[in-house]
Image (cartoon, rainbow, N blue to C red; front, side, top):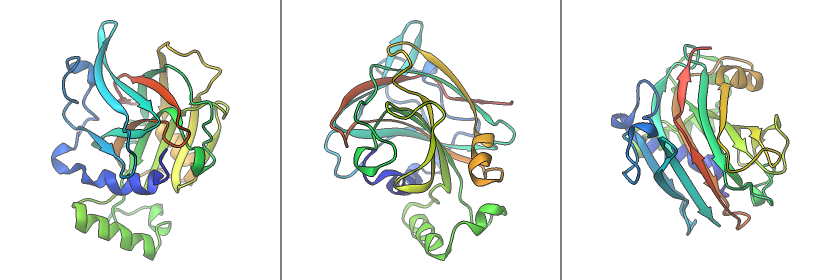
Length: 248
């Protein structure tokens, strides 16, 4: 991921606006037409200083429309605001495939923090929302949250679980993003998995959040998808199906 990483991402996600919030999860790509604009609630985020953003487009694959992200030495993401209770619907389901992994990617360092595909589940920060997270966000961070709200009209997320299709890290590898300590990376697939083939995924975001922080998460505020090769000057393409939240 670009060196601005989750710290910049968390701030930028706040521009989504209340009108874009999906009460039952993000809009489905399969309900759109190939070649059309992104479905309602989805937006693209480009990073300042990254000259070659990921090229996102809706394409037909088999009998369904999916989202394709093609990256050549660049990065950008697409995201959707949501308003979901993860305890009620804790399981996020999706399918994805990649053309190739990013051979020089290293999730432990800012200088090579690239990956073929990422799925972000971001969690809400609300100073009025009671919970254990209140003790984690200190005075300096609270001030930055207030500044973001005054600028964009919304609070940035408190934390994120990021499911990654990596290259060098093994499946099950988990660590904080080197640029944002509350962005928890979880490797789901790696170079050992076949490329060019759809893979179905299912993860319990509450269990993953709890295993790291020790308590249940606040509401889900955003979901995002990313393909990035800017740090390693690599090249790849990834495809994503619908993201759907269900009960356990």
